Image 1 (tube, helix red, strand yellow):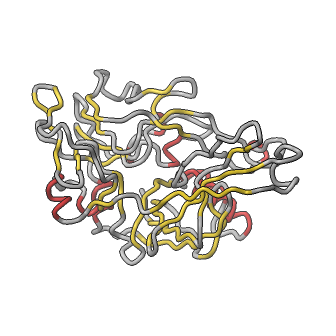
Image 2 (cartoon, helix red, strand yellow; image 1 turned 120 degrees about the vertical axis):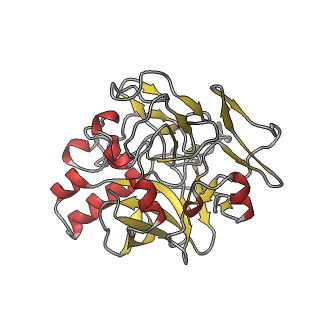
Length: 339
């Protein structure tokens, strides 16, 4: 399904979230630290830039555009991008460990190890934790948050208290020579764009995914009994969120999981006539909780389908299937004890 790697190069600082207002009565507020932007942000950029300078039809984008991410890469090696490490691999600063299944239970040897790394090179996807550490194929997040305090704001931009209002937000500084990476079915014309909630400048380039590349082979490989999420996992309906699939086509028996606490998931729905609020900006999507990337699933029966072959009905709906913004994107993974 995915044909292009979209590379987003920040031109200076990026902003990880909208900030909070401070006042003499409230001096402890601080904005959140949501970064990088979800794939839905890139999907919105496709639609908005196509309106300004068309490179395809809006109908083509509505029907066929699929994006996924976020990931990241070193600028000089964009094909070797980094994805979240599956939770079965625990890689610390000094040593490593790995979960395995025995008689339906998760077991590991070194229970005192805390993971120090969250990202691994996609080309080493099925390597063991020991091999990943040996080959230096793991990395920590290549960005840091820098809080910035604004002593005042313009009346037509944000509303604060009439006097003594302060605005605090989290800027994000990425390491030199690194960039954000997303997967896409369509190519975005090369150039400078406004990207993210604070509309900061980025440079965007697109690379074709080669048929002999690692990511192409992984995405094409059927998922049998075990897989790991590399994007947030959203299951259920508009009313209910689940930690695992509930669709009739999935095995009814509860899968075994390795995961962490759920994460909030929300994005802006664009600026179309049906998705515009009173201020003229896009309305917010339904707030949900997502299963975090890296979550591992072991199903009681083989699915025998890759993610691209999953039905749109397996995903929550937001006027469109959330498959279009890469939710639940997962790759098959080898786990000791799974047969």
